[in-house]
Length: 132
Image (cartoon, rainbow, N blue to C red; front, side, top):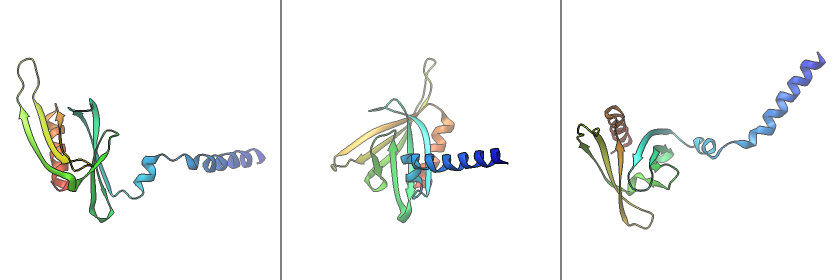
């Protein structure tokens, strides 16, 4: 009886000790309405990475590549898709060109590249659902 009481108290104390160790992502998720992520290859600054589309209250939407700065949806000027047919030695790529204004209102661009047709289509559907 005493042994089970001690074990219960130890487990309860661990909950209180480890509770403050929440990650930043978990704290962010409290306000997050929707989050969709895709594994990508970002041509300009990153190699293999993740692009994340997030929706917050009051219809605030952001796009973030890897751990870089996020871009608000209203900063995006244009997103368009290209299909680069492969050859015998290379595969077909599905490229999404994104043109946006950075934090200094400078027009910048990048390419989000998928080598998988299904992943490219899922990303395109997510962009449409996101409002593009």
